[in-house]
Amino acid sequence: MLAEQGHDETIFRISGSLEDGTHEFSFPIDSTVESAFISVSLQCLQVVEIATPAGALLRDSDPGVDYHQFQAGRIVTIKKPAPGPWKVTVSGKGMFFLVAQAKSDLSLDDARFVEEAGRPGHEGLFPIKGQPRRGVQQTLEVRMSGAPSASGFAFYSPQGELLQRLTLAAEDGASGDDRTYVGKVTPEASEFRLAVTGLDARGFRFERMKAALILTRAPE
Image (tube, rainbow, N blue to C red; front, side, top):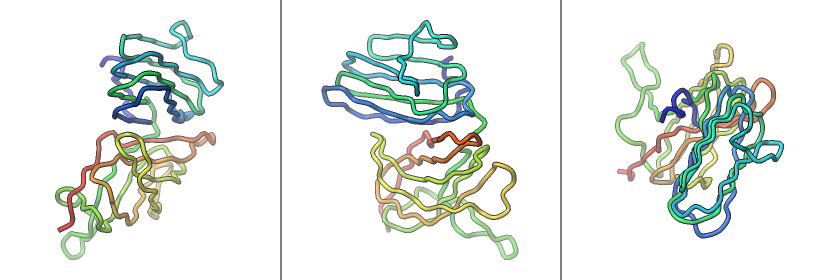
């Protein structure tokens, strides 16, 4: 819990059940990440390997690494991690959880379903009441900070499966690297996470996820 503090941005998050065998997961760490927090747990764990973008396996003796090994998991904090694609390999089976979080100024500030509302002369987009509806086109608003270019938006299942790719456009009048993206989407699943991808100022790929699941309700 102490290690997780300060790592407010979720890069990657999945949970579910794994069949017996070896499984690989990859996620990008961009150049704005000052510190990364990776937590892995598997019910019947055999092996966990965390590989840097250069392909080297992370060790507890590496500079800037705080590495905790448990019977069913690993908790690792990495100061100034190398930007690029990181890979986690696990062997075993059972209930599984993997999260990668970051301390970074590049942030997914908010993601919400909105609708046109407001009194005359003060109209605008306001959060909908209750949960979004499945199978019904609605407006999604996403706010980012420190992200010069967000180009990919998608819904993922809790297990990390791609459900839907989305098309959102940046609103006019953006200031600096702060952007608000809006678009029409039709949710199809009962629950999902939103992921946003793009390139940081140095050209490295970034990914940010909304940690909380978005739950939907059946159309009326």
